[in-house]
Amino acid sequence: MKLLSSLWAAGAAGLLAFAAMALTCSAPASAARLTIQSGGTVRSAVVVVHERLKLRRRPLVIILHPAGGVSVRAHRHAGLEEIAESSKPVFLYPDALGGEWPVAAGPDADRDVKFLRDLVERFIGEGSVDPRRIYLIGEASGGALAYRAVCAGIGRPIAGLATLGAGMPTDLANCAANPIAFIAVNHVGDPRVPFAGGPAKFGESAFDVLPAETALAVFAKNASCSAKRDDRPLADPRGGPRAPRGAILSYSGCKAPVELVRLEGTGMRLSSHLLNHTSEPYGDEGPEFDSARKVWDFLKRNGA
Image 1: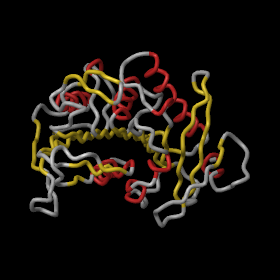
Image 2: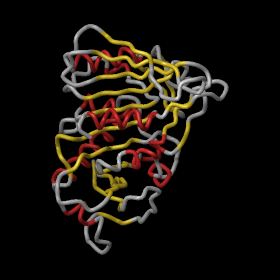
Image 3: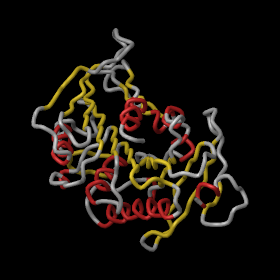
Image 4: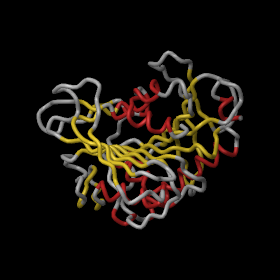
């Protein structure tokens, strides 16, 4: 396990160029910037390992950040790492070229899917991660690329996919991926990604997305779920006017669980601690939904 071991040896040789970063969580951790050749281009990612455990393969959680030029340091100072501390997976934060993931089909998207494939093979080849426990989390444009990676394949089975404020591109309507644990978090009033489907836009990148419920049905079909969908109110222990409103849509009889968190109401904010920011409220400021905890609880139940 050269890669994980090297995170704890500051003088180790190899492709890792260390960038020491302070952590806000209490558990010892080490972070490093990894560079690899992918498609003839030098690409980079930040890898984070919490504590030096016994040499064993761990889950790999790949987080695809949204466009916007936020630093990797900001991406990492996030509630997700703290929430997931007990599981201690390997966190991987790939860097997008130019700070933006491609959302439309084409050579740029193919290039970045290959980049993810090359990263995964690097970790598996060194015995660092469990090839049966690879998870993708993507927000906004990162979520669109995560959908593409799942449908195109990254050379290894993906155990789970989580997207936040993202839409599934319409050209993936016939995606025939293996059954995977899937959760999406979307707001019916998101101005960038229409819940009912249609034109979506992240920065200067525009593309068409499927309705959120249709994307859920695609993954339900791949997981051989029953035809009956179960819609239940979103439960929140806080209750009262500060509790987020919405529903959790899911199917039964699945080979892998699939869920869509449908958020409703003006003023709702996605508290996306995954990337250390809270979204702008949809209308007047109101309830906040802890998407990081919801996503991690779901993935942890499914092997992360």
